[in-house]
Length: 105
Image (cartoon, rainbow, N blue to C red):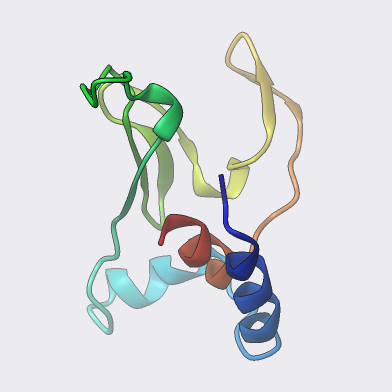
C-alpha cells in the first residue's frame, strides 16, 4: 500500500527533481554523495503475528533493487520491468527518485 499523499508529494517534487535512482550512481561513486541504500518492509510478507518471512525486506540502491533474503535483484534500470525465466520480457516505466522515496517512507 502506498498512501495517496506519497503520490501527491512525488508529483510536486517531480517538477524540481526528475532524477531516477540510477542517476545517483555517478555522484555516489565519485564520493560527492554518500551511497544511498533504501529499505522497506513488504507488508504482504509479514505473518499475522508480525514474524518475518524470507523476502520481508526490500532494498533499493543506485545499482540494483530486490530482496536480499531471496537473492533476487535486478538492475535499477530494469526495475519495474517484467521478466520470464530470467530474461527481460517487457521494459517497465522508469520512476523518478522522488516517487521511489515517497513509496519507501
